[in-house]
Length: 94
Length: 94
Image (cartoon, rainbow over all chains, first blue to last red; front, side, top):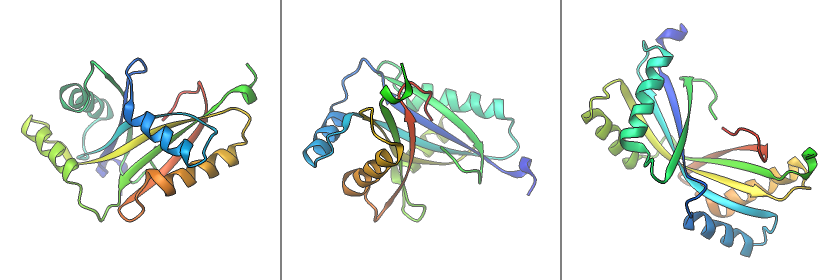
């Protein structure tokens, strides 16, 4: 199938800003410590979105739309930060 | 700083298996559709962990420990799948 007939997959990684406390991450770290994994020095939790887009869009248009979706709905910019990865469908992701 | 004095960061991406319904993802997709993003054909939601490890471990040992953590605590293998990315601290991640 020609590449331009394939859709896009945008992976969005959302994490709490470094300055924001992450109680869920701390809970995970403590649980793992108490299970004996003492070489763990920290754990933070985030969200991971996989967004599928129709074929026929240009990569820059996909990125523009994805960033707008993040800013309007998926990410809380006060406490969270995000980054994106854009791939054609069918390619091995993150 | 020599590389071996740097710790490790393991990124864990947890997603629902393709055969498992993802109501949260569907809700996100519908919300974005109703906001006018009609080139979106699907959305799935997952979890994203960043685990920090002490320096002085070999990469294979870090991977072994991280996989065990996933199987014992972080991932529900009945409905979820995961993949890992291992990097030295300070390197640009996923």
